[in-house]
Image 1 (cartoon, rainbow, N blue to C red):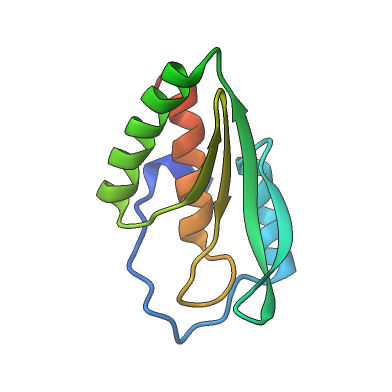
Image 2 (image 1 turned 135 degrees about the vertical axis):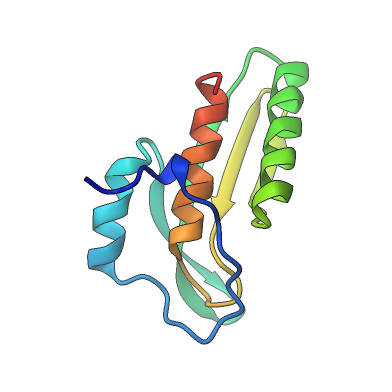
Length: 119
């Protein structure tokens, strides 16, 4: 059995490798329930991103969650984009250096989910 994403660490990615293929994404996506792959235009090209929305009771709860995500992002050296809308937080994750998805993006998504579950 393969190692769960939450047991892995993000590895530095400086580019020079291709983004994950559709087949590779299809293998990883079931490990991050509720996250979806969304093609977005960034820097004049279309690339795959991971996106998910989290809903909270209020702004204070949303910000407490984001403080934990901030600590996680710093420890992993991989930083998501997010938008706060009072009690809702929208995430978009992709690896800028390769212009698409990398295993690191799925690792970060799995660990964000773990925070929500109290882990």
